[in-house]
Image 1: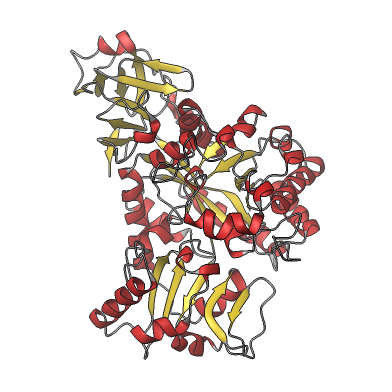
Image 2 (image 1 turned 135 degrees about the horizontal axis):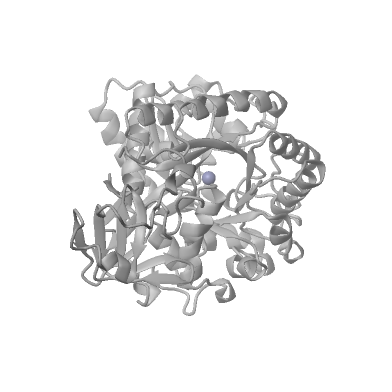
Length: 553
Ligand SMILES: [Zn+2]
């Protein structure tokens, strides 16, 4: 790294003049420059794209390095518009339960980890698949068998649920007498004692709070590992969509060590109970990040709101009740409070990034953005609604009208066990058919962007692209795709992961496409997969990822 030349504004100095020799020329393949633009060669100098096609080819003789693409493909480095890098990095610590296919496998992994780490007073791990049990209900007793004498706390891969053993529940003081907190649910046995599964923030926090805090060194290492993993799949910009107090520090530490190899924008989480105080607090954190003086690598421009939970847990907020119940899920904010908070953070110059899953949450989020647009002076606000799972057809046109970026975790738009076992049955067929309306939003004129929600799901943008384009699950089903009218074209899905995510993060002035003068954030594949059957797009990993013309990691 280094030599990235500071802020976006400094990039224009005769970028295309071609006087000095290029640092690198890429030839012999296809270069996808950006939506609607391709070329055959690319020249890079001082970290920026300085020539295309024959003009680039002509510089090969004097260039410091000539790279033969051998029929491969170059694309802009990907943007991940919604992910949780520190959580992703932390998954590599603790018992390895992420791939476990049964409760027995999870218990076995926890048992052997406990045996190998006798000094760890709490065993904390992530992340298990909640679809392994009906309703995602996991019993403390199953973990007690593996580890009876120490607290065990595991996060589900939805990151909205935890599973605790009896020792953890006891240390946290969660008993039959503990009421459900305002924003959370404690699964219970028939006699009222906690089962071991706790859902959503306040309930999860009851146990998470009791566990020891992670040290700054562990957090920094987790973030460094996350950067490495993002680079390996071609990601050069990411939106951290959940930063709590102190969560900006690992970023500043990596930046100081010249080791932040993914450009990052931080999303500070608004708390419905104390958001009024947070307006000033977040301003101070933003100022601390700005003082580091590398806006090309690290910004803190965003406030994250959870409008609801997730449908698979029955906590996504719905306009009509879940099938067979009178329950409409869990709106995290009163609608009027959400509007007031979004308006206040918008007035303070923050981008609002709203997690909205159910159709009621999506409507509340759109209403809140509408309130801010009406109340505050016009500015380049680029509000984001993330996940966009169930959208009432009446609300589809409002994204474009309000300038809301729809951030899709396209890997989710497939009929997998989570969808079949937990989600569709709760929604019923009519609402199940409204999920992830990506093509409808493109048609409506809205900007869409790619996100992974990693480690909730894979961070590989190509896996997300494959599902966005085919709507097929990992077994290639159902034939023709799930809700096929919402399939994207390869070009649309690639645009969402490059130019779309760059727009979301305000990095479009200096990266996100390979136009002349832009930073050479790019990804190189040995195979040109643009014209392949997208269903076969599996296991393709980049040959290299560049950040401002330099290979990372
Ligand atoms: Zn998320």
